[in-house]
Length: 264
Picture 1: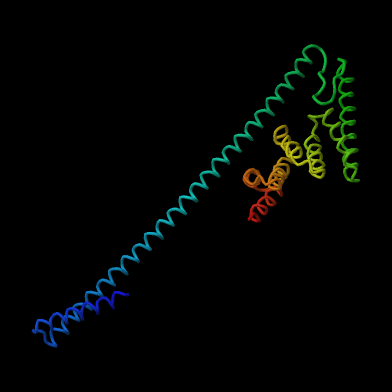
Picture 2: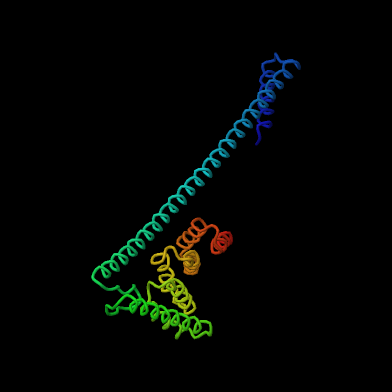
């Protein structure tokens, strides 16, 4: 039963009471009905106003909740970006420390009267300067030959043999300028063999051991995709965002942004 019906019945009841006491007139009845109708109208207006205010309050609360959610998400992303930058800084610091240690070892070798073998080129006997430099050049040529052979095997689809060749190259020449490329190929082979966790670890060695290498954004992008494939969504998004934010001008960054846009 609605308010208008209740008001009508109340007006009728009041009219009946007036009639029953014998003092009612038609004018009295009209006044009672008008007052009751006005009262019902004011009640309806007040209830409508309260409903609008309640709806406005709910909209405001929803808007504030959405804003708080966005703020929390933005703060979380900023904190994660800071953590990623700290990781990169630690990687760079570690690489610099290893470089300094290598230079210090070479200087110590020179002080003792011979050239120390460069890291990853094997150890050699002390000899005169020209002889030692010639050996280093020969070792570098052998490293490139080993690497090129591994790449050719990879391109021919001989993944097992290529894997052994890259592992042999890294075991002998782990600090060579081609080492990041070798690790990237090795990670690709492991991914093709469905050894996804090992592939993630191998790709991860590139930013860890070679933080200034050109392959770093590509490696981080592959790590992000692999984590998404393993349903590690949070880790996958973190690495993709790291690529997009830390290497915004790289090809991998554009691919990472596209992958992030396509996430459900």
